[in-house]
Image (cartoon, rainbow, N blue to C red; front, side):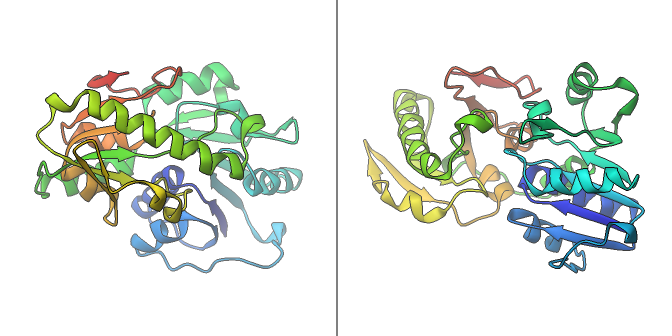
Length: 282
């Protein structure tokens, strides 16, 4: 029996696609947030464990990371104490050590799976090289198959929102909501400055799965000739119907790149961490 823990969208996509491809059975789940619908969309039967976890029941513990980290590290600690094999599915390229650090203590799994060459190299630099493995990204393969049968239009400019925190020390939910609205205003100003590059006059804002849509209702419906709309579609539909994509080091840039979309990475003083070539860094 394997216990699966997942919460954030990026990690949930990679972990669920890997489990589906490998046809892994005898699974119990602890799924939270966006991960619940992601696993359901891939036809997993979700028996979500809500009671106290019996560690001795399981032979392996698979999990994806969150930032900031939380319950997955508490569970990791418990499973390691009982010498149960622990495997992390790592889905990004930043804050690697911080993803395994809770209350100033760093706890690493027995194995770390990465899913592209860049992540593999970074992880080997940060951690014990013998515990890092490069695996196929089956989620990306799924995306490619879907994209090949998808109509690609140019109806709007897509703005990908993301939580407004740079580190665990600076993170707070109250700060996030206010800061995100400030970031959105900056994104829109950048789009206005680049207006001559676009034919679209509709900006579709896609909240991050960890954000509340109600916080975006404060935005004006029209700004300097652009209509503003909050997305109700799937990520891949939003990207397919876009003329250009704006965001900050978003995992969704990978899908946008597969569709050969124009990508603007608004960095806010950060470094570009997305390992694809066709990004315009601002």
